[in-house]
Image (tube, rainbow, N blue to C red; front, side, top):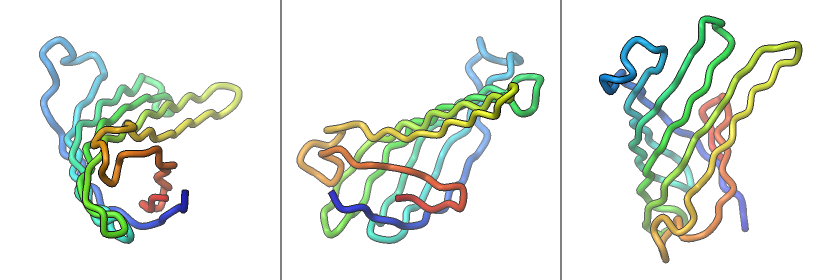
Length: 124
């Protein structure tokens, strides 16, 4: 499968937590993203995070629904963005993205697509 590259803009806006998670370190935001390049799309989702008392230790997960056009094919797909950052004797930062297979069968997101976000707000 050929790889495609592009850029994205994202807005994260604070959102209220569920009453059970108030004051326990869990945060919630809404996600509003625009993709540019071969994938012209809009993405909307939810971002949940936890940051411990140690500033370099955190986890997050986001679920995003992306809808747009890739190489002239219109469709949509869902993404999961999990990450964990732990500082111990060794630094470990895992960032992976997963696309839900068949999240919109027969459309742009109907098959497996390698997916990576880079720190410079580019995707590939």
